[in-house]
Amino acid sequence: MQALAIMIQQPAIDFAKFLSVSHEMFGYSPSAAADASHKHLSDSERFLSCLAAMKDSNAPVTLPPHLLAHVSFSILIATSERDLMDVLECCSSMPFTSADTVVRGVQTAVITGTLSQWKTAILAGCSEHTESTVRHLFNKMLGLFEAANLNVWGDCTKRESRDQHTLLLEGPK
Image (tube, rainbow, N blue to C red; front, side):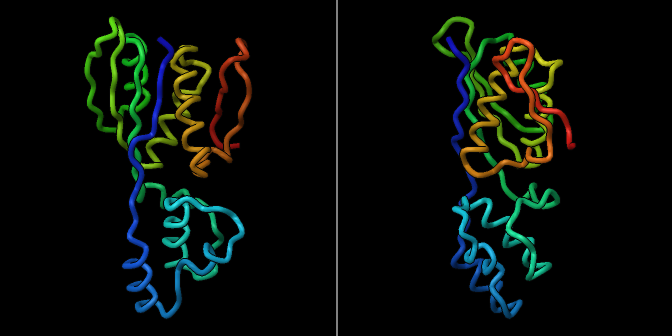
């Protein structure tokens, strides 16, 4: 069985309440820059930009590293028993629940963490010191976040591994 990673939970932000109260409190909308952006923003990306704008109305529309703990995500994975231990080690700061499956030797887990925790875990999971099969699973997780416009690894160096199948991430440039 090929390892599986599916994002099953993302933040649900009540923008109507958040923006009406914050506009009243600050005298401006913290979503103004995000709303004016020509970029398609995920709710998480828009929310983090709004949080940055609460401190600075001219804050750029980005994913500020110091605010990444304000949004959480859960990922369902299925992998071999052996690889699951390595995955959970990379995700050691995050809560998880795991279970055996009807497929012999395959376990599943749901891991939940903040975007900041996922950044750290995916950096660990995509390192050259990680087993190739585990690195491949973390590459899938990285792809889930990038597909959701949550690429917080832009400050990292990406390169192919020697087997040319998996991406390696190295800490900030």
